[in-house]
Image 1 (cartoon, rainbow, N blue to C red):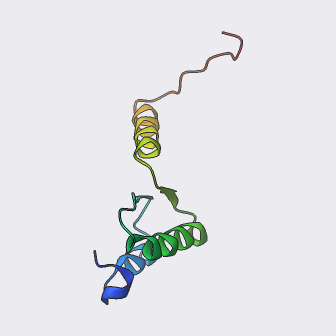
Image 2: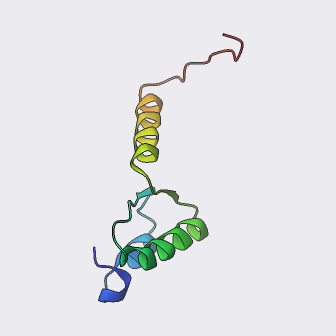
Image 3: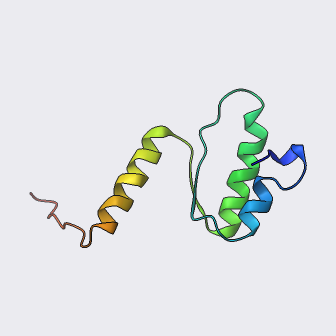
Length: 79
């Protein structure tokens, strides 16, 4: 997918389709900061989960794997 400044269709157009459930965007380099701000803004306005770190992405994917497996394990805080 193209960056926002590279014409259409770009990442903003893809988000507008409603087919995106979550975004994993790990910015790299100075040029990525502008698109990162646009992605975060679009994600918030559309209610799309946005993750910007690899550790956050790992946690998200692990959570989704647990949810797909059925029931969530429940632990008491005292344990």
